[in-house]
Length: 252
Length: 185
Image (cartoon, rainbow over all chains, first blue to last red; front, side, top):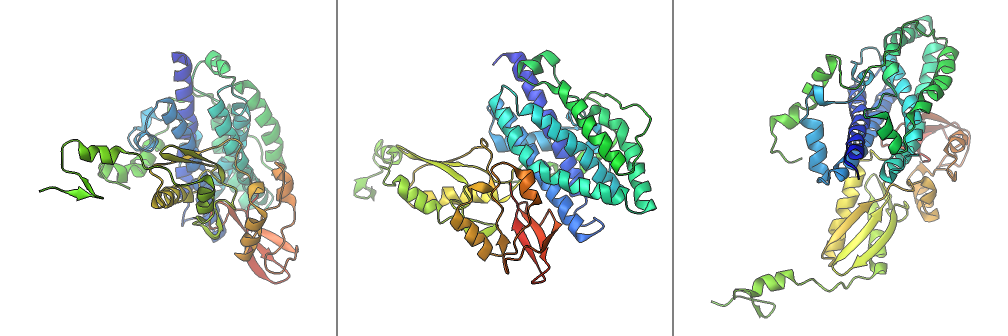
């Protein structure tokens, strides 16, 4: 494989994995804190799914690097600092209101399905196969989050107001959902045509949000690259990595 | 002093390494391996074996190595590592010198691959089996689910997420009991 293609692939896999890992960690923070037991269980499941998907992407990267999978994944998850992470900023924002987490999950998963549809067509078979595998599980996420957005949006004045506040906060970050690292030409060289994904996502998400009685914020959607982060990522990592860093030699 | 193992002198230079290196002739047949895999249970649903779950795709037998190709169910399932470890342990116990469990993602595992016996056992375990869907998952999700206790379809999904990644929580309005379903995938 040519070096630049390999580099593109490596950066792409890490970006995909980091999105899933960081969102999975945020989801896991609801464990034992969600408003009702069923939703506690649901967010714990979502967390497990996302972290499982992260593991698939990281393992694929390990394969590419011809590294031993488990130690590679541990190293990349627990021993990188915030500036080296390549996740989009939406997934690192702290939880706060439960409506916020539910809406973020919907915005991310609906975009992820579009991304996976594109990746599943990639010329690099292991990437395409992994995308197809992950995609089958996302149906449940979308079913769950859509149900709740309807309930919250069409529920009481308070639930709608809180969901609207979440949308106002999250919408600017959606400009980053289809941002991938690497040169466009290199991605195209791998058969990845991401340009079609964003309009397809908008065509689906915007009408649904309005069906939930939500008003689309007027502000711009920021197209940020994946190098920058909010101050929240370092705080998250500090907690997530603390046990592993306490005793690097520990076996677990 | 001369040390002997199975009648051979092992402390003479050059002899012991030779014994250790010698590959055991594989006495296992593919049928034996399938048989053994049919005894290994899914730790989260101990009523059903890996073979009944449709997870074992292929079994290969080489000179000194048994290769098992396994399709993972839900990708975040923590039971997968337990199952891999169990396959390795059990096959070594019956004399496989080396065991390799390879994961296969394509085609992705589907609940359609659960065998008819597996479906019956799920029911016996109190889990409604997933409907057959031939890849049309959306349709499967709209279908009424029959209660594993009384077979009524007067049931309702309470939560798409349950105690494990593969289970949803439902309620039967006829026998008035909560139950779980193995989610179609």
